Length: 130
Image 1 (tube, rainbow, N blue to C red):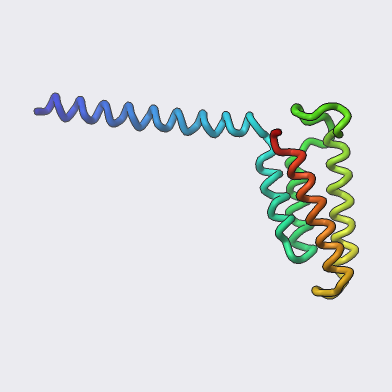
Image 2 (image 1 turned 180 degrees about the vertical axis):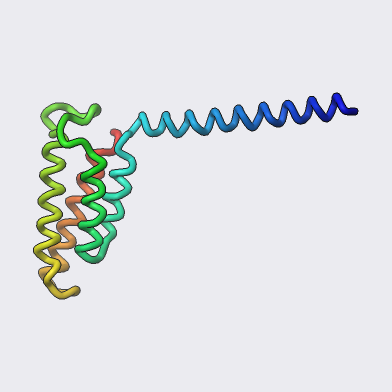
């Protein structure tokens, strides 16, 4: 009886250890597949932001999570690089700062936010694996 309980306990511990090992490796594999997932998440939050300060906050975090220069592995060299993405994100931050003084619901405010959201969506699509 005691031997059977020990065997069940040993098998249970081995299964837990194996499950943990698989989970850790799946997370590492997903991160290696697209190391920019966290930045994409911040850009998605920025895209759904309704006020400029919130948008600026998330874009700033995304900028910190992306490299300053170099090319994206799955892009052709003609498509662009991180230096151009960083420049686009800087432009988005500046545009958001410029409209932050406008009243919410103002026609210019709405059209600028729409344009910024569209630009953020385009950047996200560039960072996602094809």
